[in-house]
Amino acid sequence: MNRRQTKGAETIARLSAWDRSHTAAERLAGQLLRAEDFQSIDPSHPLGGPDGLKDVLCIKEGKRWIGAAYFPRGQQSWGEIRGKFLDDLRGVAANAADGIAFVTNQELRLAEREELEKAGAPSKVHLVHLEWAASLLDSPACYGIRLEFLDIEMTKEEQVAFIAEWDQVLENLQRAFEGLTEKIQALLGAGTTTDAGVTVPLEEIKQFKAILDSISGTNPFGISYYTSPSLGSTEGHMRALRVPIDELRQFAQLLDQITGSARLVYGSPLTLGGGAHVSRLHVPLDQLKEYEATLDRIIAKQRMLPAPYHATLPFPVHEIRTRRHSQAAGQNLAL
Image: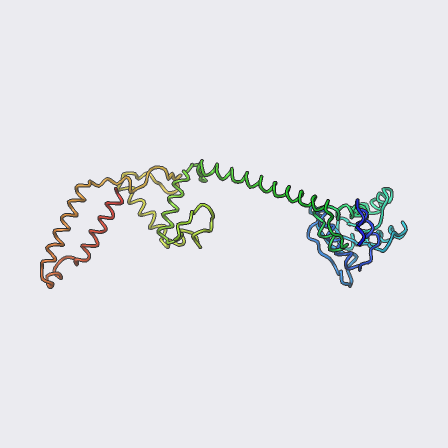
């Protein structure tokens, strides 16, 4: 097998001696336009049919363009090239476009390019001629397109260039990720600012979220809740709580009155760092112990009474035990 021509000559030769269909030419033209930063590439009828004087519709910088593909076999005369361009140029007005992108495998000299641009005025003209098309196809980003349409594989040198290009992309991604990580770390250390301009310590936000998790039954496996917004929960915490917000507000106001901290006015800036309500409740420990001992004596006497006397008590024994346990749990919480 003969080694392919180097220094771009193989791509030039295969483009010039184009022996594929017009369908393939239109599709290659669309790929080359995409490499030229055209967007919304919309081929008309590459398999045949009325195309409305355009092979492709596309967008660039907010402007509407038509694309025309001209891939004859071998170099054509200047008159043939110019005639084809002028025929395709009619599609600009017919499709209410702002310009024409003329993609061809023909060699165009500088003077010829300038003449085509003048002929297209006032419409915009973008020429992808033989040398330009070969240059695009011989770039790392288009090696796959070149293999698809021209059956040209990468040389060892091109493989090295491709790997270097890919390494540069990875390096750019790594830098962007590191910059994002630094910003996140800065937020973790500094806290979060509310809409009212009040800075709320991030640790208190985490603790509050952990409490919501435990109440609503989310995050059952103890996964770190700030590593991913979706871990440990399938829906928002407030929706999982199923508690009317008005009742939560009334409960907060009641705690404020008990603790003497009724400074929370809804509609005013909210500061989480002023101290939790429960931590501000001051219940003498001696009274709790005395209350527990009293309950123990009542329960002991109740056990000594015959069963019929249970019904005469203000509330059943099991309710006494429940209240005692609740009080003990409250004691532990307050402590």
